[in-house]
Image (cartoon, rainbow, N blue to C red; front, side, top):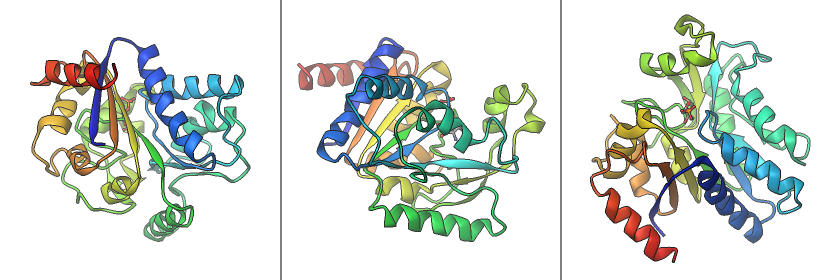
Length: 259
Ligand SMILES: N[C@@H]1[C@@H](O)[C@H](O)[C@@H](COP(=O)(O)O)O[C@@H]1O
């Protein structure tokens, strides 16, 4: 396996392909460990997983989940907190056991120690089997902003102004309400996941996607580290794919490999 690239036409296809990949992992290992991302990109996937759960095609009864990241500085019950987001969109809608959903701790007194314990908890669960990923317009995955180490573990980070501007839409359009800090799985933590399903849509992601797939590996575009991972399913729409130099070739490869 390698980085496989699917360029698709609509949200239904994104949801179907991404959910098929998660279900594949589930069939091999019903007690798989699932990494979860926030953002609008994975919502169609989460809706489709809930639909398949309701149809009896997948169960999360033995699943543990680990979120990618969390804001620092929001009240714990804030609607836009990432643990709350994940609960609303997936975890609270399926049959996951009490205490099986985990997220980085953005509230503890010693955030560095909390981050270390989070990496340990992932390890204790046996490692993440499949991680859902989106991308920020500045190339971040999780909240690993440009300039960070490509082998970092879970850590406290500072958000770029661009990320805070992008996310202001969830905070009454007011950048000042967007936290300045986060706790995020590091790139090293993310790279340890056995597989990834990556989703990006829209023109706003086109440059980050181009760098991720075709750029040189660099901390300027943290998602480029994924070029070193051997099991990444990239699912993007035409807009997100629009700057790819070899777009037609990727389509040809996908068509031949999935004929
Ligand atoms: N920390 C999250 C990322 O994990 C996510 O990938 C990104 C993209 O979000 P969206 O899918 O809404 O564009 O948003 C946030 O910054």
